[in-house]
Length: 182
Image (cartoon, rainbow, N blue to C red; front, side, top):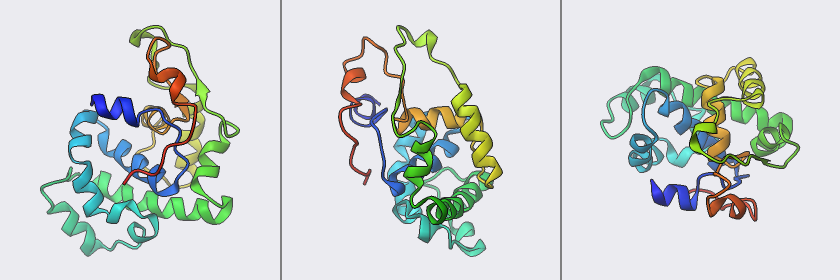
């Protein structure tokens, strides 16, 4: 968890594949701890073709059955179906907006929301921004994108910088976009 915090969490990500991966994992995390999801991350990458949206969007019912039999990942049918449907949503957004990154970052005019929280107690579970993103994504057919999931997602990909003001990462994460997760 410390490595994830120090290397990835909150660093602006503008790579469509990486953004899709975090969207998928954020949905899987619902009701679970992020630590559990991170421990299964490599298995998810393997099971979901490194989260290439074009490949995942073509998954059939037969492929879904194979995923449900995979003991290395979280085997919740609704969450796995959501990943596949969300891949299709990403492709539709890419067609209309040029990239999923342009779409997502468009909610904040391309610049991360930088909060200056002093303690963890101040961190919200959602915000008017996550409400708006959630509503918009649901209207496009995305699943497992409630406002709390969207807020956590935006934190993880750097759309929202919620490192505490006293954290050494607060000032660092805005310096440059991170490379795509592999």
